[in-house]
Image (tube, rainbow, N blue to C red; front, side):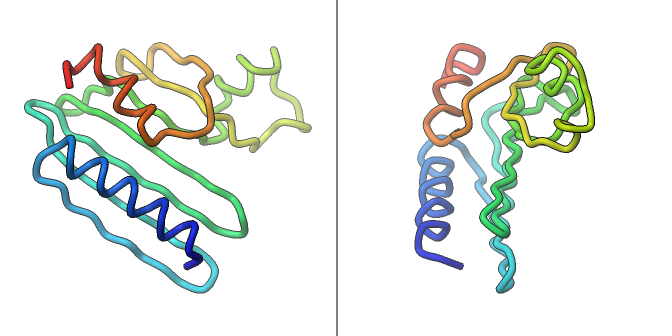
Length: 131
């Protein structure tokens, strides 16, 4: 795991530990990839974070759930709805493209976002969760 990835994971862990309760995390590394899995609580909410770095590709999922209801979720998966929102349609050129986006209201609402979470996660959650 390179120094930049180590620092990135440490920043996420520090942010979680200073913001949430019952923070548990696991870092899984091989020469080809590094994965951070983090779970935490904030009152009635469960926070789930997964960050994966491999071959210079970053995949992430940051979700806040109330039981199984998605209050808010940031990820950059190749979600067909995000691709359609960004490009107007889904074609072979964009299929599988990682697009940063935000889910709300149990994934009924979707909007495009920026590509870095960090403090942005706390800023986006603040109005909803009163952090």
